[in-house]
Length: 329
Image 1 (tube, rainbow, N blue to C red):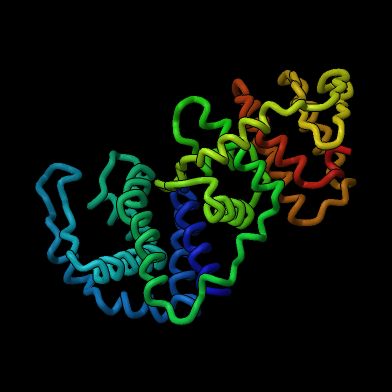
Image 2 (image 1 turned 60 degrees about the vertical axis):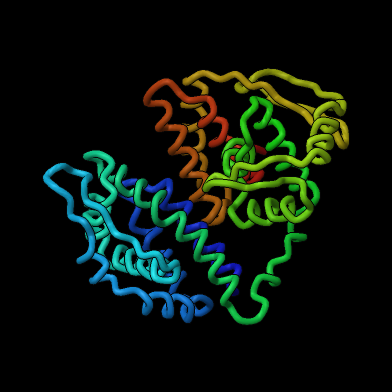
């Protein structure tokens, strides 16, 4: 591992903590602590930890009155000491998750539900730490640790696809988000792939001014023109045959873009789930593909308990397709 990949792992753990709930917040905390104490970051982490007296920090805290949410922490002016204190919080939380729950409930109260408190401390403390720690590491790490992961790992096709997705998301007048684009258009992309493509677009100047945990961005004028031109390009010849329960077959000419509109009913989805359960052992999936497929089928089953959300069904279907051609020959 390198410093850059360690920081990427740290960022991924923070993203997981953002979306975690009461039953899943422990693992992202553990990953944060493990990454901070990995070989590439351990020296800096140790130096920052030593700069902060966490017990004295707690003693200086304002415990508030009888009203819930009135307790306040007195953060120091020193950025180094602040980073060290957050490292103490992460490490103590990883070692004792119940302590983390009580700490967030006391100082980052956001209602009676623990998950609301977890998300508030994540937004107020962990996310800013992730940003500032990366800057501190870049300023203090020895050598040139940030030159190892080249953004040219991103293919031109992936860059074009992400840029087009951002352009489409921005049509409503709001700044598009890279994370929203990944969720909506590329659920099969892993974080490394998304990061490489996003970094490539940043470096070439196609996307500008990233802000927030969801990475809201602006498109450069030249990138916007390319995306507009791509949207106006002819999509090629498309033949649509049947519906989901017949033969959803398309032919698209080379270089073209096609859209298939599929209709389905709850009975169709139940039939697909039943068919999968009946024949999954015959598909020859490896362990990773099987776990991914089982998770997406479980998502579809959960949707069938109520009125299915088309966007969730679509995302699960795309992920199933990404498990391998054996699923949908």
